[in-house]
Amino acid sequence: MTQREAGPARMMSTLGIAGFCSGLALVGVYLITQPRIARNQAEALEAAIFRVLPGARSREALVFQRGELVPVQAGAADASGGEAVYAGYDEAGRRIGFAIPAEGPGFQDTIELIYGYDPARRRIVGMQVLESRETPGLGDKIIKDQDFVSSFSDLGVTPEVVVVRRGRSRDNEVDAISGATISSNAVVKIINDSNARWLERLPAAETEPER
Amino acid sequence: MSTPAQTYEELAKGIWRENPVFVQLLGLCPALAVTNSAINGLAMGAATAFVLLGSSLLVSSLRNLIPKQVRITSFIIVIATFVTVADLSLQALAPAVHKELGAFVALIVVNCVILGRQEAFARHSVGAALADAAGMSLGFGLALLSVGTIREVLGSGSLFGVDLFGPHFEPWVVMVLPPGGFITLGLMLAVFAHLRARRERARKGAAGTLEERRVA
Image (cartoon, rainbow over all chains, first blue to last red; front, side, top):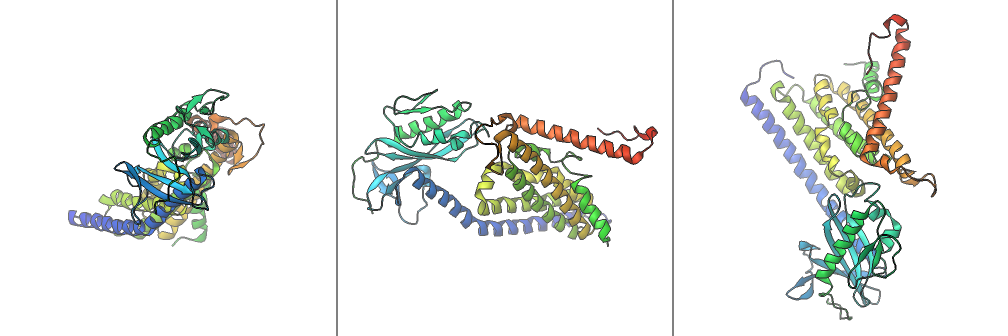
């Protein structure tokens, strides 16, 4: 540090140069890391799609436009506008269901999740939480509690999914996690709200893959 | 230039005698907030170490160029740059860890350990500043790791995600919640203060000087 008193010009130029160098460094690091970050997110989504649609080998992003599902144009970003769903196909190219991303308020912050839906059987076949900030040790059981997560692997949706305290008896019921009732309810509400929007739009019968 | 003994002294003091968390009581926000598991504590310690070492290196090499009236602003620019680099790199290289730490990586920028070290060591040579930064980083990381270890073992019954006690252990959920952080850190501070007081007494030896230096 200099002992001389520095004038305003010196101070301003010091801060200006520091800010400029910092900006350059940040832009550089951003450019380097951005593709990797985008790829990580895409991979996480990809893995989640295949996890909630057991048996799927390939998938196709679809958006709902003017009353019908159309494939997302190649090159366009996946999940643009949050209104995309993903159709999953097995080895033979038969569509086995849709992976539907959905989000809604949790106990502390928005919960983002994705769930698999089989329109032919009208059942949910899998669910995975993508993003959440629920209380560690309590609310985060919506991710870690295997009983809770696996109850979405074969779940009826008519008339809607219901949370019960203990001992589910009907096939559209999910046991609430003790100590995490609010988070359990939030997950189910997100799915019900999303179902209300999407289920009518999804064709139940097998159609030609729209490629 | 400092001698190797001095350099070692700068390095060692941060780990124990002037440990940033247990002795200086700095950086308590991350020490409480992200230490609900050992791996989170370690990751936070590593991110902070990166920022502290980088900032100390840059600040001490530029110490003759920065007018003292704008030094704190300059330090903050340097620190904020390193924090953003750490944030983006974590997102790119370890997305799972970044997800766990959440907003607390960005909050390293206001960690008083880092700004405090720049203020305290800005006049020193690059070597001394780096040794000091390395010591403080180690001390901070060890503190976070130990708090995180205690909380994870008691609160989740596991260590680094490996189950320790089998299905019959009922986790003390409170330990991974915010109160558990305060309880753990408070007890560890008490242990540290007790050890220091005992050492102080042993060093002074004579009974008359016992109360000379009060240890809180």
